[in-house]
Amino acid sequence: MKLFIELVPSTCWYINLRKELTQTEWDKIRKEVYARAGYQCEICGAKGRLSCHEIWEYNDKTNTQKLKGFQALCDNCHNIKHMGFVNVQISEGKWPESRREELAQHFMQVNNVTRDEFENHVTTAFEEWGQRSQKEWTTDLGNFKRDKQQKTLDSF
Image (cartoon, one colour):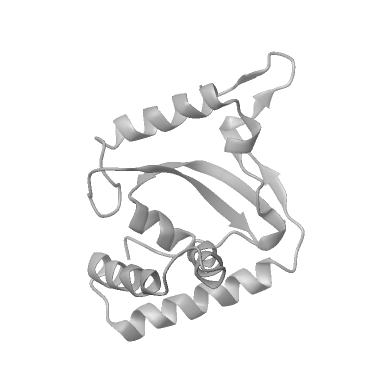
């Protein structure tokens, strides 16, 4: 599959590189990511509004989440990555219930899978999220750590 759900464990919510940076630093990263992607979604190829998605790798043995890089994503692909956030927005009445079906259709089209395959993927993703959310995680910003002495990013 090209597109899959990436649920951040609840114990890691709001822990990300973007929160560690100034707006100017984050803008530099996201603009470089968009340019590298040719100003289109790196998963489905859609053009238009993009988000800079942080790619995390989870080591379930050491309970470490490590930042591996970034992806330029359209709203549909980005919302699928964060399906838990979508569910919260819908439950709070901020987004219409129909948004869930729009995303399901997008997922099935991008991955060329059936409804059953989509539903199985959702179930598996949320089961994994539930297990990971029971643990405390160490965050490793990898090559994107801020040098505390220089107050700059190692990679940018």
